[in-house]
Length: 401
Image (cartoon, rainbow, N blue to C red; front, side, top):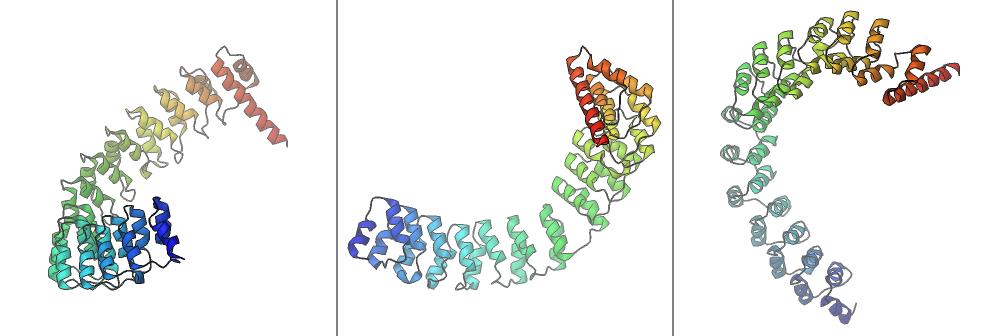
């Protein structure tokens, strides 16, 4: 392409024209033209230039890119492995203020991490930069350096060390880390070392003043809680900790412990407790909780599909003072009601209970009852009876096909 073509685009007032020129590898740019583009006020033009093949850059131009005010421009350049950098330029990249650029330089194949560079990296005040050094596979850490990293003020640095499979921890380091006030650190140590959660450790963590530690150790399936510890956790001041305990279905609860959970002041806790496996098809427990003072607990017991209700329990639900409980009963499939119970619910004071029974697939009204319902003065119930009639007709049609 001729010089006039390049010059016209090089000094165009439109950034996208200069951008297109900078990224066009079919155009051979002179050093002076590259200088002009490196001075372009639009970072997008400089960014496109930074991606051009390395042979087009002089050492001075590389210095300019490494100090470009745009982080993205410097990052694009740091990723270019086809550029030969001097040791001074490598140092400049490793000393960049932005973590992404330092991290990219650490991964370059032409970067060797000398003890001096490592020391400077560990002394940076940016935790993410120190993390990148901790993760670098180019470094074989000494025990003293591992101690330093494990004592870092930023947890991302400590966790990066713990994730490395090539670093073995000393017993002293393990003991110190297990006393951490951060659950992720404790969890990482337990995972890395496969250390068991001893009764002493478990008791220590359950007594921690930090909620995330108490919650974390409970969710760890290696932690086997004693009945006394379960009792303590069910009275933990944090509802999240109490919920975590109830989600551990591998730890059985006594009826007394279930009483504690079902009597919790936080309904989210009660809701989880109602899903406990101890309530599955246990007539004794169902009878116990059908007399619970909370209508939410009584209704939830009725709704559980993995429970079978006895005739006495059905009668108890029909007579329950709470319409929520009675509605839960009529909405449940497979419930056998006596004619007297059906009549009682058809005349329930709560319209939701009446309509719930009418629409139940288990309820088949007599023709007389159906016709009386279709002539109801209550428009809502009349529409429900019409829907019931349609359901019965559809069922009859399918049976005759």
